[in-house]
Length: 491
Ligand code: NAD
View 1 (cartoon, rainbow, N blue to C red):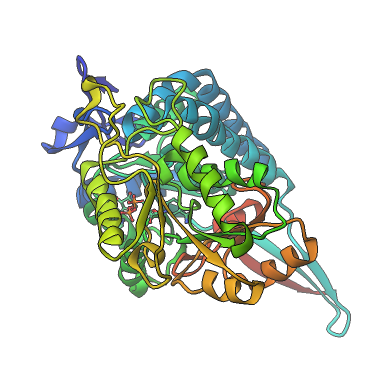
View 2: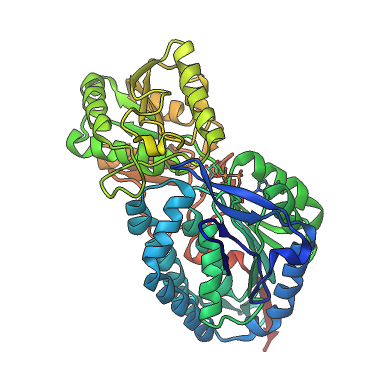
């Protein structure tokens, strides 16, 4: 591992070793610290050659790793979890500097979840049993044998860097696959630190290989590599489309976890004292840069004004600031370009007659001089927007949410479903029968009622419509990283 005086120099991790960037004269990609706007890490700008080496390493490691017992693989996963836990502070600080999120959030959510991913799948693989059936007509015993698919290509985004990457690495390893992974070029540092953990626990060389760089180079090289039969991707819908096209000639197994435009629906019987903090969290956690964030809040007309007033008050209390400050709720957005994109949505909404009820497109005045170059925006509430407007249809992926009134259940279900995405929805009501009715009709992968982001890893997770193909979760991920083979024995 190479670390310069102040700038971190990330290196690829192939066949159990960090590869000196000078070896292939690799150029670097500058990785900016969102809170300061300064370069803080250099990422190798890898390409086909590095991916090919990584795939060869993973392919060579596959026969041995896949022949380990589930218990042996689980032991490695547990050791990995333990070591990340010992280094939780370092991981959380790096995650915060890399992505702009508050360090307190990284400590409470991102890194603990990465640890849980390894612990969970260490256990899950030991309870992953196959099915059998005796066909009494044919007099034959059938059973399903599941074998790991091979080298898994894993590609992850910048918003929850270690959290999402390890939600792919852990089940792939547990299932017996070997891996070529690529984190986002904007947030590669914790993935690189994870490679050191793999080395330190003695994970056999080549079982996990990490290649850093751009999606169009490294990502596509993984997707089109003929020796990578399974690809798990989390990221934007346009890139999901591209991966589908590029992988099409190879008949790969694909899992696509894509974008969202999620509705929260608040009925007039819902307890506002729980709804308000719930909506603030679901709209602005991680600067609104969670695929599951609510960005369309439908409020039943009778409580609309009261809700809006209380929601605005609570949002104004949501503190934006320097991510290392343990009292802040929100840090900086991932990049200058992304900040400009989010600002563009706010300005367009305003130009179209929308009202900025709170926040806006300007950098908050409270940001200290030392961080004025950072990519900060305040939590923003838009009202008076039409369902067809861009801010109600497109994924903004920032701290912006729209609040609109509705009259009845029938209407709100149609309006909530009236976008191309289908990731999740939140329903706030005391009426259980209504909750079940909505749960059946909302075209999404997850419906939360009276809560948000409560995740049971046993449950399938994913999106419908433009939000993705496939599901991740206990059984779903293990099924994805294995092939089933039906064995039929005539008795
Ligand atoms: P992105 O699609 O731009 O990039 C995601 C990853 O794909 C990165 O590692 C990137 O380098 C790589 N990539 C880019 N182009 C590629 C290509 N042509 N071939 C292969 N790989 C390529 O997404 P992002 O901006 O990093 O993340 C934000 C998006 O991710 C949002 O749309 C958000 O909703 C989505 N997301 C979805 C989920 C989910 O579970 N559904 C979770 C988190 C984020």
